[in-house]
Image (tube, rainbow, N blue to C red):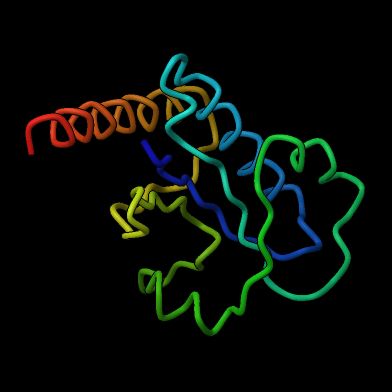
Length: 131
């Protein structure tokens, strides 16, 4: 089956909070065990600045795509008072935005997001089999 995508958004000159989001994004996907092949990590890069050297380790584990920020504002509709880069976005295998997760900052939040992801993947498997 086609993988789902766990997407995060940030500026090319990724600051410490941005690096933290990418770190937890990688950790969540790798913690899915046998299901990690069902989720691709994607970082949507805003702006045309060069990527910093601090991002090289993440580039081996996540796909990096440069995008137009105006298009993202339409596609992901940020919650009032929040920025696009404050959340993770789950995209299903057909390219539909499914759910927004608050960015993870600690192991407890990562575990909750992992459990939610595993439940969605399980339901998706059932749907593909019987739907």
